[in-house]
Image (tube, rainbow, N blue to C red; front, side, top):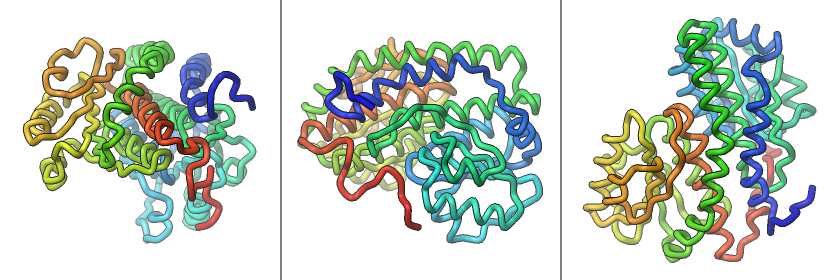
Length: 358
């Protein structure tokens, strides 16, 4: 795979996100008979993954509960393996892995198999161990991802899980045919939305240069953007070796606010959604306490500009689809933070593309 005009693979892969989304849009929101059968039989869904895949599961839990009305759990694979989860009839285990070879998640599959639970794998490699060992798998088809830090594959994982939730929602009569059509129509606009954000990459780089002396970051999000806050923090840590922490917006007042001062940079995920006013209230308080705030906000939002130090705008979309757009500025933030420090952004120290030991 050639990097073409890109200085490294990770930037190339971030800029391939619109293509990945377009490819997904060309597909229908339907699945193979085996996938449909497994999903229809589920009474409860258990997501299992590591790292970025765990964050996809966090979002999946929200998608499945809100769109499909099905009870859902989400586990870090190593924790799933270390505990004694209480399973019940009708459980469906959904393992998520970019490589399909993650050691801890393979152990989770073994545990699920021992308990006679059906397994669905969401992978980016149709020939992987997970694809072979699962009852059925969904290939996210993001294309080969060379950089260690997952970017476009995370987008494809989110899309696969979103599609599963839509299918289940329709099957369980949680959403109507008209609602499904509206969601699909809005999803089809995401590639252009992603391109619009990527066209602002220079804005993100200038912001990184402005705050490059900062070494402490809070990524703050609520509801659908709570998992994205965690993913943004992880991307920053694994590429630029800076300390980033994902914080639920409402939890900022329950301890973390004590750390807020002018040396801490807060990245607030605050699109115009059902929790906007609550998020704005916390943002204002953080600013009042001396925090420097970068807001990821919906285009046209002038209110947030009064309080945030910097604003990076994303296009308007449905609330449920906002994570597909808010994550892109965070990936760019992580990339530029590593680039300005001269780090190897494709191969961060001490890390591998997938973990082969438990």
